[in-house]
Amino acid sequence: MAEDLEEIDAEETDDAGESDGSPAKKKGKKTLFIIIGAALLVVIGGVAGAWFTGLLDPVVAMVTGEPAEKASSEEGTGPVGVVYLDLPEILVNLNTGSRTKSTFLKMRVSLELPNGQDIPKVEAQMTRIMDAFNVFLRELRIEDLKGSAGMYRLREELLARVGVAVAPTPVNDVLFKEMLVN
Image (tube, rainbow, N blue to C red; front, side, top):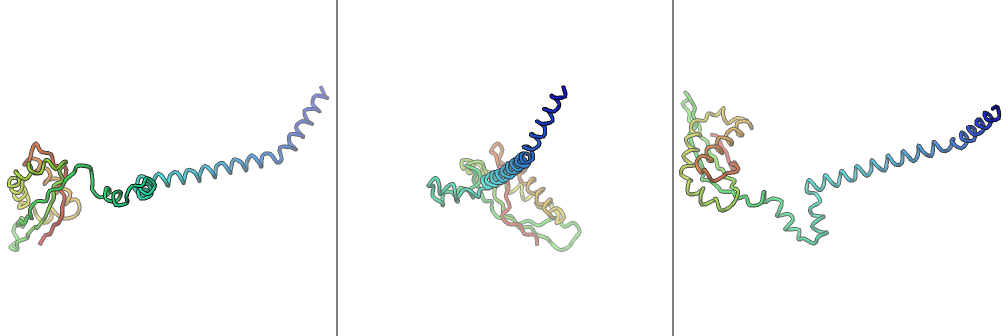
């Protein structure tokens, strides 16, 4: 029994002697793997971010042999099939309440339509659209147009009114091209 204990002690000292360099090597390998993994994560994340933001489009166009003009022209066109219809300039007198000085709103807007086939349908209802816009805009006060929240509410109201005027033809959005309050 004593001999067995001596053998175990001898094995432990041998293992301890071998293990003096081994844990440092294992710790060094673990650190190396962690650094390599972190570097790969950063590189893969950077490439994915560049891909999704469109920064890699010129590189992809160069590799695939696609002309650069085609790659850059596709970026600004917006959703496929969307067309824009410019409405006539609108000039209305705003509701000033008891003020004696008149305040005017001048604006130009465009309608975003899902496809070009809807343009004749919307143009046929242009008088109805302009009437709905004028009636609504003449009741606005200057305070209603202040800030980005006022612009958002105005856009939503105009979109609702144009939607009613041209129903069942869909209108995606009302886009402001110019807006001046004087």
